[in-house]
Amino acid sequence: MTSEITTIDSYIAQYPSEIQEKLNAIRSHIRECAPDASEKISWGMPTFIYHGNLVHFAANKQHLGFYPGENGVACFLEKLSEYKCSKGAIQFPYDEPLPLELIREIVAFRLKENMEIYELKKKKKKNK
Image (cartoon, rainbow, N blue to C red; front, side, top):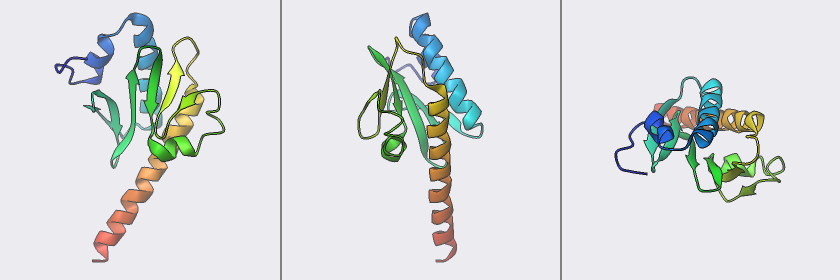
C-alpha cells in the first residue's frame, strides 16, 4: 500500500478484481449494519468509526483480515471455529465465501458495545 491511499475506494481499487469483490462485499455489509458509521483509512486499512473504532478490514496475501477488536472476536469464538483468529483479528480465506451474516452479527455487537461505552462516558461526564 502506498501513502497516497486516503480513501476506502482508492484502497480497494489497488487490488485485483477478485479481491476487490470481497473487499466491496464486506464494506457494503458493514455499511448496511452501521449506516451512521463514518469511513476512513486508519493504520493503513479501511476503518469504520462509530463512537470510536468499530471495525477494520484489509486485504492480505491469502486472506481478508477482519479486525473487530478483542471482544468482537472473543464473543464469537464458537462461530469462528473454522477460521484462524488472533486476539482481535479474523482471517477469511479468499478461496471461501465470506460469512456475511456472521460479519453482520459481529458488527451489530460492536455497535452495541461502542454505544454502551459512549453512554457510560457521557453519564460520567454529566455527573462530574
